[in-house]
Length: 217
Image (cartoon, rainbow, N blue to C red; front, side, top):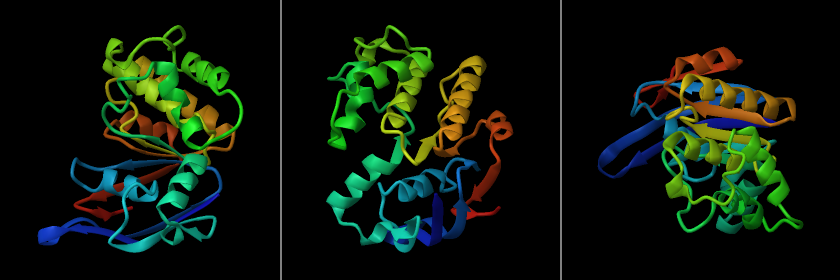
């Protein structure tokens, strides 16, 4: 896979700039870590790469195809099939069970078959075996984070984008999450994560740093 970010920026009303012109490209299967202080533009950049937020200028390319050329329906379909997202904070739907939440990307992509076996396997890998029928309100913050990662991997995406994936996790579970990312990479999934957890750096082959909306390295 080739990920290209070309001169991407994001500005809001009143001249507020969340992301200044940013460019980089990565080829092949990768494990990249994006660090920087709060408000530096990490989440904005991740959301643009994921197709969740349109840039004010510039383009994002996957294997030479620009996300800017896709309408809303095509972009949603592309994201469901190619990009797994682990957003910051609590993102499980309260009305669904944990298993149903993990299966949701499969249904949104309108795939054929039964996703429950894979969802159950992913939950077990995340140390959530036996949690399938629970509701999100019954899970701790760390358990919700691990369930969200399982959901992000549901469709075997080309790219997994994770915003603070080890937040709310103790050191042992954080290491378990990074080990799961390593297994995903071995299976051909590229990983791009934003984090304040410097322990994650030892697991990543690419380190990107942001400050005040600018990519420094």
